Amino acid sequence: MIFQDVVIQREVAFLTPDRKEKLDLYLPPGRTPGTRSPGIVIIHGGGWTGGSKSAGRELNIGTTLAKAGYVCVSIDYRLDANGRWPTNVWDCKNAVRYLRVNAEKLGIDAAHIGVIGGSAGGHLALMLGVTDGVKELEPPTPYPGVSSRVQAVVDLYGVSDIRSRKQISPDGTPLEKRVPSDAVFGDKPTLSEADRALASPITHLKKGIPPILILHGDRDTTVDIDQSRDLDKRLTELKLEHQLIVVPGAGHTFDLQTWNKKPLAMDLRPIVTGFFDKHLKTK
Image (cartoon, rainbow, N blue to C red):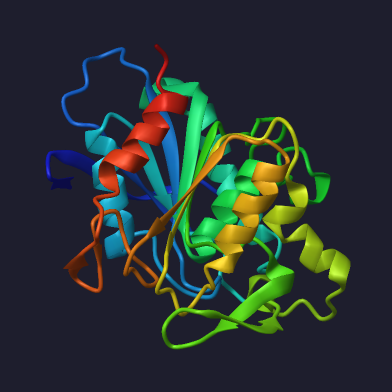
């Protein structure tokens, strides 16, 4: 399939043979043979229970980044209530490992791989960025021993702290009442505060994590903007490289150009591609 001069290969297997989840591969137009391009994993949203790798936002992101010279994979991951956690994180990490294992075939610079995700996908993108080497969150198969470390993270309005998501007023103002985001765990029979901490990116921040770009609309009534503000505050305290951009007038689920079928107040394409260019493209 060709879309806006970008070649898209659908339904590519990247997990064990028994798994139904696949990925869509986006290849940059006009590459010369032997070219090595940075890779990017795209993670869809849907409250950890739904969504698709082929949705409009993911198509917008995939084509934008492929046209900017990146080999992208937009992935599906486990949504089933039974066994959802931590397989959802494992699946995302296995997408990074897939790119590294197939770097020569796909023409990928295996040393420069990024991740971008929206909503639940933003949470999972953050988890990829900050949990490298956390034993419980490293997938046992099908690529044992292959690194799932990424070199840059873009988080679109994701949950950074499973423990403290706030209820929101209709105008997007976070309220004081807090509710945990336990949907990430599926039907896990018992949950402890340690479980919720393990699933919260904000608890894993430390020196050595990759640069993070955070994008959040100030009219978001699904994920409170304090999730991003608190993450920004903690990253600043730790003096870790990052940037928070608040998108005026935007609610939840925006892509890089539009929200609710209307143009955003700012075009995010040059911001996101510029961030990835800075951190993933060798000089």
